[in-house]
Image (cartoon, rainbow, N blue to C red; front, top):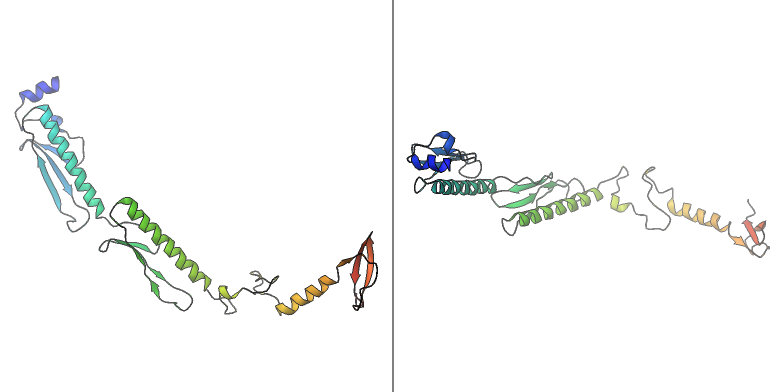
Length: 234
C-alpha cells in the first residue's frame, strides 16, 4: 500500500534510484526517460563488442505498468543472452576435437603416427541435425567415438623393436603367445612347442603296468593303478 501510494503520487521520470531497481544485471531505471533500459555488450558473433541498448517505457505511472515494463525488459535481456551464447565457440573437452563455428560441425583432427597413412591428417566431421543441445551432444559423442577408433587403429600399427607391427604379433599356433616382457616367442617357436609336446607324452599315465610298445620306454609305478612313463634317456 505504501509503494502504491508513493508511485501514484510521483510523476513519470521522478522515481528515485531506490524505487527503480530492477534486481537484474544490465537492466536499470532511467529517470530522464521514465523507462527501463537494457545495456548489454555482445561477446560473440559478428556483433562482438557492440553495445545493445533497449528501452521499455510503462504505459502509465501505476505499479502494475511499471512492473509489466520491467518484466518485458527482463525477457528481452534473456533472449539477447541466449543468442549471444549460441554464437560462442563450443568446447569439446577432448583433445583433437574442435567446434567449427562457420560450418556448425564437430571436427576431428588427428595426425596418424603409424602404418601406411603415417603423416596423414584425418579430419572427419559431424554435424548436428539441428541446434538443440541434444543433437549437438549426439554429434559430439559421434566425434569422440570416431577419434577413439582412429587412435586404436593407429596404435595397432605401431612398430616394435623387431620391426613387426602389433597386428603381426599373433603366432597363429595354439600354445604359442607373444611375451611382452621378453619380446619373444621362443627360438624357434615351432621346435620348442614340438619338444614340449614330446616331453608331455612321456608323462602320460598308464594302467597296463607294461612298457610302451615301440617307444623304448618303461613305466614307474606311482600309486595303485597309476604309472609314470619314462624314456630310455631319462
